[in-house]
Amino acid sequence: MSAEPTALLGPSEVRELASALGVRPSKQRGQNFVIDANTVRRIVRAAEVGADDVVLEVGPGLGSLTLALLSVVDRVVAVEIDETLAAALPATVSARLPERADRFALVHADALTVAELPGPPPDALVANLPYNVAVPVLLHLLATFPSLARGLVMVQSEVADRLTAPPGSKVYGVPSVKTAWYAEARRAGAIGRTVFWPAPRVDSGLVALTRREPPATTASRAEVFAVVDAAFAQRRKTLRAALAGWAGSPAAAEAACR
Image 1 (cartoon, one colour):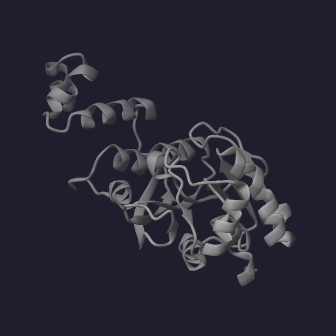
Image 2 (cartoon, rainbow, N blue to C red):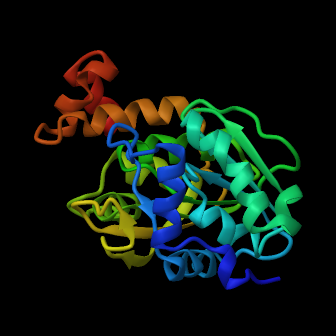
Image 3 (tube, rainbow, N blue to C red):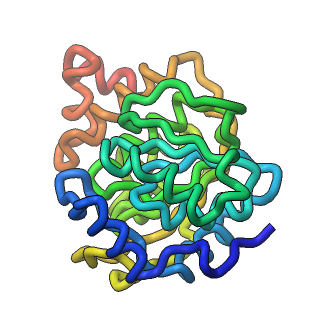
């Protein structure tokens, strides 16, 4: 099933909705609303979701991406922290896609702490993640909802580079390693600044994720992540020095590495 062109939000509809709600995009919450219908169509295509998918969306805002997803997938569960936006979105869906409104669920919660979702477990994550918390939100969702088999997230271009960086790259770091524990991540396109309101000062990138089994290890994920955090905490130090606190001493760190 495809969305009718009138169902999706354009620049004037986004601003009218925001005005009616008395909403101004919040820099504190990293809110940049997508105002271009072709961009949300492109995101849905790149996510490769279809009629059988249950999609988790984070930070739906005024509903630009929500409407595009709901036109294509079986069900959308959206997590929104903003009280005004959370209260308004179900009405927007009912008004613009009434025949699909029963396939939408809104959870008013912080995506950094959300622990359960209504209905069948989601198999795909598709989201325009808030710039300031994109990495912790992504890692929390991958850890909390193992049913998420794949995803497509829009993040700041620099963050996209970090999430997809291979070992040895200059930007390889904590986000690269921790994301790789859960999934294979790859760049899936670039997004310009003009498709947002307000226009951010940075470009955005799409990152596609495919869940995989975590590496075989006798250590727990928490233990591995503790080493990762320590190793990258002071990048200018040698690994021996960086891991000294974690291991108990520089000598113990060297012995563990060897």
